[in-house]
Image (cartoon, rainbow, N blue to C red; front, side):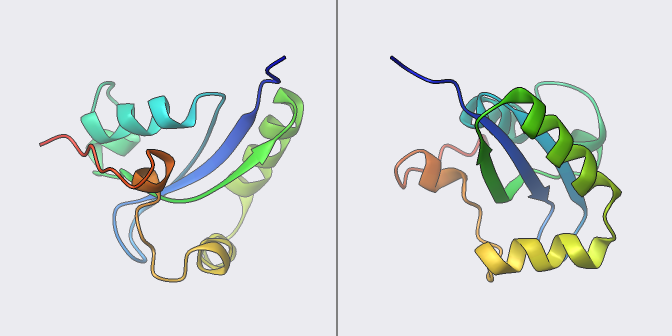
Length: 105
């Protein structure tokens, strides 16, 4: 039986660039949407499409609570969170795809 998982994630425009916090139950698909500019909004306008941090949650409620808390955080705290997991700010999207980069042109 597959248990559903939920993700809270941070995107960046680049190292120490513009940040965006989001949540989803389909992380690969959602990041692809950000990268391809499929929908209008903040991330498309500011070219925020580098997945720099994420965490997994077991329930939708946990995911929503965590996302809301992170959105209220000071920028410095978000940067600390990113750098604890990803000190070089690499785009983690390729790792989700098994090392393959499918960045849209």
